[in-house]
Image (cartoon, rainbow, N blue to C red; front, side, top):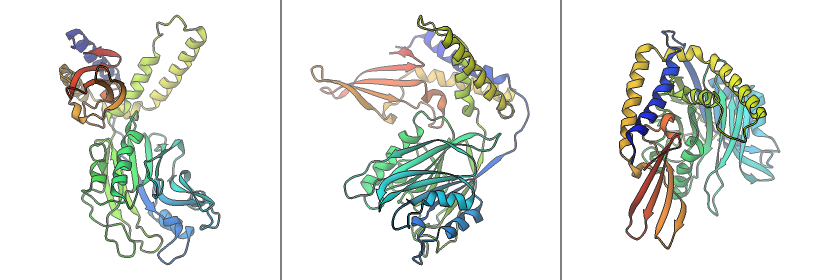
Length: 411
């Protein structure tokens, strides 16, 4: 059972972060930053006229002037594409940075998804999605992108889901959440060919975690010559981190069997974006009580702290635009209110529980999960709160729940 002292300590931790941030408070206002997001299934460059023409695809992309592009059905050195590395060639033709994610080996080469970006890409990751025999392997490729010198660092991802088997497609969509949202507090944009229409399970399973930027835009994207189905999307998170300025299905009926989808997003700075950086400074600004800690560790920690603090100073103008005195007072009240919610166990039906141990003799299973007690876009509690649930298999009921907040154990 949680004690009053623990509640006060947790509340103090949150308020301390807000108090640190309040140091930067002022009325300075940042210019809005817009991001042009394009998703395009290029059908390995083959148009409805049967010709493989990457220059034509590149011309479409350049005309739309995107900042980031999610590409699907991209060949890399396959025989059907005459050995061309299509992602690299498109990057050259559009003068953009590129990353390729292999979904499978194909025709003497590789086949998968790609990202083009006006800005440099870092920490590229390829997550392979569930698949079954007789179906094409699928993946999602993601990368970190800093949107200009003063813009935020975001995660941008491109994916292509199963087209024939609805159950498999749903499994793949469910995998996207832990692949891109777990342990990720950065603003994130997910775009691609989801091979399903609005209100179907594949799209619905994403909506608790993502916002559909194309919501209310009924225009179909496939097939390109006479579009009938809307199956290409742009999603984003956090919900309060972006504002949709424009969304359009581009009238391009020949270059591919899909039409391009362009979405213009405006970044809405959120104080939550800076919480991980504040935590990092707080974690580094102190020496652990560990007998194995050495002078070399001290020096490294000091270097890390100086580096992180230097990075933080570059963000000061944006922080100032967010944390006016009035907003700080509001956030303090918000933090206190959220902490009051910990007096009861969060609703476990919303948690994705994973078995970590079992005891057949006692008839119990230990399940573990990170629980969102706040909206899914908030990193503040998602990164701190973890639940361990002991489930009685005989009585078919929860026998015990242990919750930890930043390592403090509440039972």
